Image 1 (tube, rainbow, N blue to C red):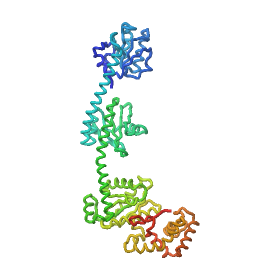
Image 2 (cartoon, rainbow, N blue to C red; image 1 turned 180 degrees about the horizontal axis):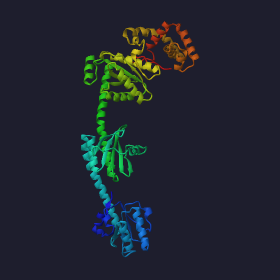
Image 3 (cartoon, rainbow, N blue to C red; image 1 turned 120 degrees about the vertical axis):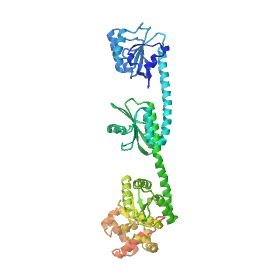
Image 4 (cartoon, one colour; image 1 turned 45 degrees about the horizontal axis):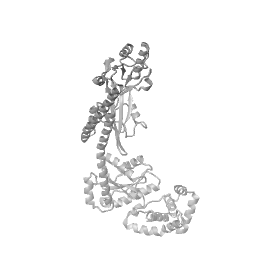
Length: 520
C-alpha cells in the first residue's frame, strides 16, 4: 500500500512540477523523507519520495549523474527537488539523468514547505489504511455468509475478493477446495518450507516468497484438532488485508469442519450413556434391540464386548471411534474400571483385531485387549466380565495381542453363577492364608503362586516373569508348601489352586466382580 505519484502531483496546493520520468508516475510512495547527503542510499530501503534542496549535490554534471544513478539503484520511488534555496532551478544534468533512468523527478516551488508534502503522504496513507479496513470488513461479512454454504464458498469469496488463487488442503497436502476450480496446490518444496519449524503456528500465516510469487498458508484448526491448511497464492506482494482475510477465512472453515465432529462427539456421549445402562442391566433386551437397530448397529447375530486395558481409555475410545466410522459402525463405548469398553456386533473378532491394532499404533503404552464370547442383549454384563478377564490375562502374559475369552481354559467356571460361589469358598480356604501372610510380611506369595502355576511349574520362566531369581522363587514356593500343606507336584492340586486364584475376591477384584490379575 502506498501513495500514487499521480495523486500527489495533482494536489494543486503543493504546486509540484514533473520534470522527468512522467511515464513512471504510477509508482507508489511508501514514505516521504527529507535528506541532504551526497550519498543517502545507506539510509534508504526503497519506495521513498526523497525530498532535497540539493545542498550536498555534486557540483559537476558527472557527479550529478552518479547521484541519480545511486538513487535509482536504491529503489526510491521519486525525487522531489526544492528550488529557490541552494539552487535557483533544478540542474539540467540532474533532469537528463533522471529521464534516462526512468526516475520521476519533481520540482518543489519555494513557497511549498517539505512538511506539507510529508503530511500529505502520511494523511493519504492513513486514509488508505482505513479504507482497507472498511473494505476488509465488507469482505468478511460476505465470507461469513458464504460459510453457510461450506468451505468451497468461503474459498471462492476469498479468492475473488483478493484477486488471488486460494486452496484448502488437508494434512497431506491434497486439495479439498480451490478457486479458480481445479487449481493445483503449491509446489512440494513450497509446502515443505511452509511446514518448516517456526514457519507458522496457526496464530499467523506462514509466508513463502519466490520467483513465482508469494504463498501464505494458515492452519485450519480448533484447539488441538487440525483440519488442514488454507493457502493464498499470488504473483504480487501480500498486503496486511490479505493476511487479515486469510485468517478470517481459516477460522470460518475450521468452524464449518468442526460442526459434524462436534455432533459426532455428542452422539458418542449419548451412546456411551446407553452402553453404561446396558452394562448395568437397566435396559431390557427388546428396548436395547430397538435402540441399537435404529442407530445402525447390527444385532441379529448377537453382540460381543471388547475391553482395552492400559494407557488412556479415552484415547483408546477416540481411536476406536475413527476405525469404526470407517467401517460404517457407530461407536458404543464407555470407560469402566479404568478400561475402555466397546460393544461390537456378532462375534466381533474382525472388528476387535482391527480396533486393537489401531489403538496399539496410536497409543503408548499399548493397551491389552480382551474379547468376550458372543451373547444376546440380555447378557451384556456377563460379556463385560468375560472381556475384562481376557484383558487381564493378556496383561498377565505381558503380550499385546488380542485374547479371546474362549481361549482361557477354566475361566468359564469363574463367570458361571452356579459355580462362582463354590470357587469363592475354595479361594477363601486356599488363598486367604497366603493373602494374610503377604499382608503381614510384605511378601508376594499370591503373585508367585500364580506365576508358578501359569508357567506350568517351570522355575526359570516363572522366575523371569516375576523378575526374581530362581532361588527366590524356590524359597517362596517352599513357604506356600508350609502354609497350605499341599503337594504342588500334583496336577490336581495345581488345577485346584489355579481355579481358587481365578475366583479370589481380594485386592484383585473390582466392583464388577471381575478378577484383576496383579503383576509382581
